Image 1: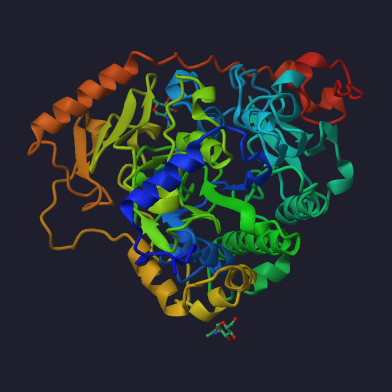
Image 2: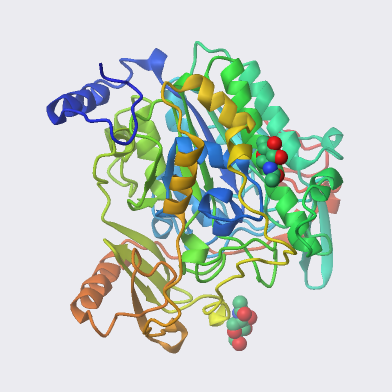
Length: 567
Ligand SMILES: *[C@@H]1O[C@H](CO)[C@@H](O)[C@H](O)[C@H]1NC(C)=O
Ligand SMILES: *[C@@H]1O[C@H](CO)[C@@H](O)[C@H](O)[C@H]1NC(C)=O
């Protein structure tokens, strides 16, 4: 008998397998009633080393780990180095350079927004989905038609800017020495002052739970939960977590790292609660859960430092080194036939649109010829070879910083942040008194772990969890190995063999000049499709929150605080 949910080791007849693929891909909408629910969770500035499944013993993430082990750990998943560019690529399936979004993230009161064009939630709406955005937007709000409910989401509960505070939802930004404070939390465009005091991670989770519980299951659900966690809050109070969560982490001596870790555990609880709710609503069997971070942790950044750790990867948020753009990522779904594995296949954030569209029985021809994302659904479900061999990691024409992956190779040209973080490798054990050992039983017994055991025919054992964990770890080169250092700040071009040198320590450019030439040529080709960065125009005189009852508001459409959202 063929176990329909067999994982690694299950042998499939190749011809049979391809029949299944072709069948699943035929006729968009044919199986609309069966289209899976999609729950897409984005963490903010979460570091590579801040989840247990990558090897950290410091921050317990039992729910995240249980989902990752029982799904597919996507260990070569790349994003953009900052928030707005990553989100722009995710929603459009296009490289940021095609959108003029390859530069910095949006600032409060900045006029820039994601260019017009159909976005991910609109595509899913057309397939009959109910669409929700819960949490951060960060893609523009100078006018109402730039905000989430005008860009494909039926509902939005959350904030417009890149960050806000975790309890009172005030976002502060300083321009020319003046602090601008504004409330930034809304329900379908209406400021929700009543939410003040409710910890953001819990507020977004509770709202998502209600969405799932009240969901009309005759339609599929597209729920995008874009947490504030674990981004820093405002200058002066960068980190915030409920005290009882902080008190559970006494093994971490450094107070900031401890609070950060508590913020991560709240994020982890959120995942456990979601999975339990999906199961109790009998939706989990037909749901795809994706978890990614928008970029690496801002460990030592000049602003929004969050004490996250990308160890042992090089660089931080804002850089094109692995610490900035190789993101924590996994997919979990009972629909994945070959799950319980670590994938090293190249994947880019743009791939989610076509991949999930295919999962939803959509025909990716509808997404147009312009998208850069590649459909990875069949390779995920059946563990087939990935269709992706290269990724444009970015070209920033202003800083002249660019990077590209091509098979095992990564080429980096130029630098960001003046090269300040080019040699930063994070800290293995940041501010820890005693390194606790990894508690596999806690993962096994977490909310998510328990639910998964109920719904799987062949759930993984605790030993298999630990094997996957070992496989998902990356390590620096042997301290004694011969290394060629490279600092692209000095005008050098650096070339790394990432599978063998994940921490970018040994530059091979001079040994493989033809690879360098070929990759530089590819960058020149990509450069031709680059749209110059959209102008960054901060309009703080007109956007100042005090003009609108101390809220960050779509200022160009509003004259005063009673500005209401058009229906
Ligand atoms: C980089 O250096 C320039 C010139 O010294 C300076 O104006 C700029 O603020 C620096 N940028 C960063 C991110 O340090
Ligand atoms: C590990 O987790 C289990 C289950 O949650 C718990 O009973 C046990 O006390 C934990 N062990 C340690 C050493 O913390």
